[in-house]
Length: 479
Image (cartoon, rainbow, N blue to C red):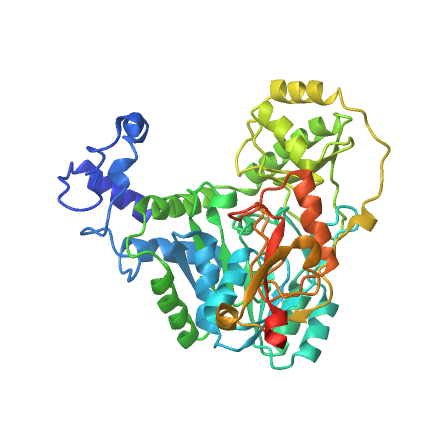
């Protein structure tokens, strides 16, 4: 079967079965009327582990076949479907491949799920500062020199975790970085949340799986036509059987025992969809994105970011900034008013993400956008080089999550937090990359970054306003 899961679900529905099993909506017969009409065609496929529908925890039938087809496409030894997003894959790969106390090198601008995995696994992280684009101030990846220096300082390191590409679809070439890490015997894990489509064409950069990474996670739902929370975990043929088995065991711990067949079917369909795309179709898609970029560039109040030619770029992502006094968050709100819903904003930029199909950005919406922005004065271009906030040199986090629970803590204002060890993360979302992580020393650069984002209108994943921070009470410890 070309789409094993989808075809099995369709066959089951065709038999007009009587549901004497979970879920409680009984193939859609019992549902709130407010959504019943909209959901009626999809609910019969929201099933459980019935005869012929296999089991994600121990697949031997259609799920196994679907995963094998995905592995073949991505040139992986094994591929696993994830129904808890790339987050569950990141948790599983770190938890399964390292022992408590192991030193792990981690790219500092990683997603919060990587740092959560560090806490769950009890490993000792060494945070590696990425390189920054000089024009935008956005982190773009690890330099070879950074890895060499870290390996000299931490020769007992067991692994390297990288993020590739960044949220904006931009990265440095990781081939030499991965090669250096492998030569020193490190396991290389890659969070490729935004790269599930890289396998489709030479129009995109190569996946780190091809460059030597041992385990790669990908959010299919970000760039492929898959439902939200649908992701892949790919294992390289370089990983031995024992380690592959440990990953399977970890997935059984972190994944739901009642996985959504809708999510799994969407992964099955997304794989089949991108297999149907040839280079001609992909080039047509990219040409459509290029045309939108050209229309946006005509608006004097906008600047389409043209990245350095040395970077690896995803042509489906477009980063823009205003040439006015507006922040990226202000600009995003203006886009919203014209029903143009962008992926994210930061203090300077707005990110547009296009899919693997023809875009649906109307000329009318762009004209209305241009008309509203025309009321803003265009300011003289200014360099952002001095605005870059660096994450400082590589540093080891010595306070484990277990120790963190027992240490005395106090909440202090941001202004007074410099020099203290953070006991909580501060995370703007999106993109979900922590500005500070538990166990990290707070310095002036962190305070400046938080204040800048707050002033620009950023949203933080916290229960309270970010005016203070929980820190380890070092005064009590000293006493």
